[in-house]
Amino acid sequence: MKNKKEFIDFMADAGVLTFGDFTTKSGRKTPYFVNTGNYKTGMHISKLGDFYAQRVAESGVLFDALYGPAYKGITLAAATASSLYRNHGINVPYFFNRKEVKDHGEGGSLVGYKPKDGDKLVIIEDVVTAGTAVRESLELLKAVADVHVTALFVSVDRMERGAGTQSTLNELRDEFGISVYSIINARDIIASFPHGDERIAKMETYLEEYGVR
Image 1 (tube, rainbow, N blue to C red):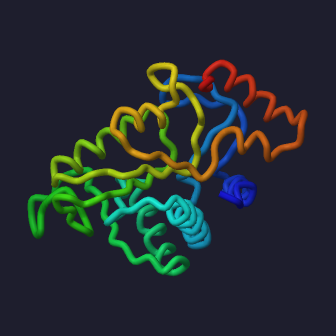
Image 2: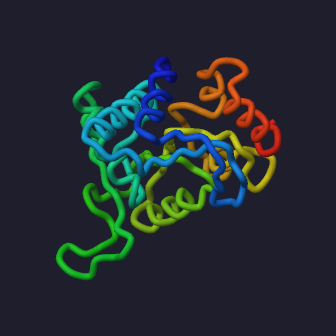
C-alpha cells in the first residue's frame, strides 16, 4: 500500500495509535497500543473505509461478500463496502453477526447478506492479537453455509508471535488456508519516525522479545 505514512498519521491524529505502557490481552507489556474504539466521527469512519477499500481492491482477492464480526467489524465492513462502491466501482454485499441470536422477526444470528453454499467471503477486522475472534468467525460462518473464507483484512499487523514461532496472522493463514492482508505493520510504524526516537526504540526492544524472526 503506497500511503502507509498517511494512514499512520491518520491513526495518531485520531488517538488510535498511542505510545506508553499498556498490557495486551495476552498479558504482554507493550509500549504502543492500537485502540480502534477511538474512531468516532463521520470523517474517521469515512477515511478508514477508504483505506480498507484500497487495500482490498489492490489485493486482487475475489469474493462475494464482506463479513464484519461484532462489534467493531460491523462499521468496518459497512464503511469498506461503501468505499469500494464509491471509489472503485465495486458493488458487493456485506453482513455481520449478532452477539445474541434473535428469536423473533426474521430471527438468526446474521444481519444483512445471507451467505450461501459456495460463497467466497472476506473478513474485515481491526487488529488481531491471539486470533480468537477470527477463529470464532470462521466457525460461525461454516455453520451457516458451506462457504470459503478467501481472506482476512486488518488495519495493523503487530508482527508478534502467536502460540508458536509464527505471527498470529501467519498461523491463521496456515491453519485455515486464507490470505491475510494488513494496511500497515509494526515495521511500517517504526519506519515512519525519525531515527533515535525513544518511542521507536521501545518498539524495537519489544519486537526483539515478542516479534517474529
